Image (cartoon, rainbow, N blue to C red; front, top):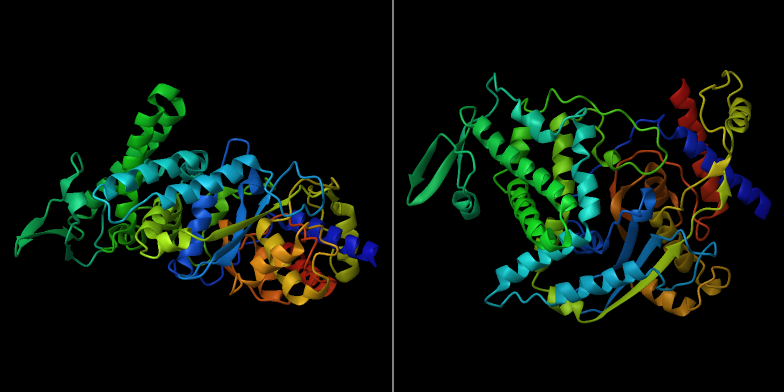
Length: 485
C-alpha cells in the first residue's frame, strides 16, 4: 500500500541520517578519467555555484547522448527549494541556471580552433567559467585547511625537509610554458641534449620541484583572496591574475611527466599531514571527495584534491581540444528537471533502536545522542532522481507520464530514449546510496564518480520499486549492525 511504501521511505531516511558519520567510506574501483569525458566535462561547466547554494543544492546530475553526427539531447536534474510539486514539471524556471546553460553553450560555440587569436579566445573562455564558478572554486580550494589539519597545503609542503632516498633519478623535457615562466624556483640540475633542455627529477632536485608546486598554490590562494575583496572596477584584473595561477597549476598537475603525482605518492612530502576530522554536519561536505581510502596514501588523497581544484580548466581544455565540438554544439536540446526539498520526516532514534532490537535481539540498544528530531531537511539527490526517471521511462513506458506530473511526457521519453547508454555524470561525487542504487535497480547505471560515504538519503519518488527499496533497507540495517558492533 502507499502507506507502507511511505513508512519504508521514512525508515530509509532515518537509517541513512544516523549512519552518516558512523560508517567508513567504501571506495569503488575508480574509472579512468577519460571515460565518457565529454559528458563529464559538460557537467563540470554546467555547474554554477553561488553563495546561496548549500549542500546538495549546488549538485546537478546529467545524462544524455553526446556523439558526433547526432543530435545532442541532454537531461539535467537539479534541486530547487522553491519548487512546489513533489515532482515538478519539465520546465525551465530557475532563471540563473537557465541563463548559465545558455551562456555556456554560447561561450563554447564562439571558440574557433582555426582562428589566429585562438589562444586569446581560450583565455577569455577560461576567465568566463572561472567567474561563473568562482564561489565553488573558492570553497573547494580552501578545503585544504581541513585536509591538512588546519594549515594550508602550501604551508605543509613548504615545511618539508627531504631526509631519505625515494626517487629513481630521471631526466624530463620541461614544456615551453615551464621554461618561460619567470619567478619560479630553479631546478639545480639541468642540461641540453640535442638542443632540447632536460631537467633532472631525483632526490637531489625533488625539493626544487616541490617549491614550484608551492609557488602555484600560494599564488592561487593569494589571488582568490584578492578576488573576494575586489570591487567591480578591479574584479576583471584580479580574475585574470587568478586565471593565470589556475591555468599553470592545471598544466603542472596534469603534465604527463608525472612530477606532481610522484612528489605526492613516492616521497614523504605530505606524510605529516594531520588526518581530517569527519564532519557531523548532515549536509554535503566538500571534504568527502578527498577522504582517505582504506589502504590509501595521504599523497593520493592530496592528488585527488588537486585534480578537483583544476577540474574547470581541465574541462575547458579537453572540450576545446576536441575537433568534434563545433558540430556537437550546432544541434542541442536540453531538458531540466527540478526537485523540491523533501517535505519528509525520518525515524527518530528511539524508533530506530526499537526496530534494530527487533532485527538483532541479541544486541543492546544503541544510545548515541543523535537523530532525536524527526525532521528531514534535505533533497532527493539529483543523480537518484535521474536514475529513477531513466528506469521509469525504460520499464514503465506504457503508463509513462501518467503519475509523474510532466506536462510533456512524450518529449521526456524521447530525450531519455535517445540518451543511449545509461551513463550519468555528477557535479560532485555521489554517496553510498546513489552508488548502490546504480547497481541494484532494474536498470544498470554507470555513475562517473563516487566517494562511497553515507549521507542522509531520500528515495526518488519515481522509478524505484518497493522491492528495490526493501533490499536497500536490509543493507542499511546490516550497515548499522556493523557500525555499532
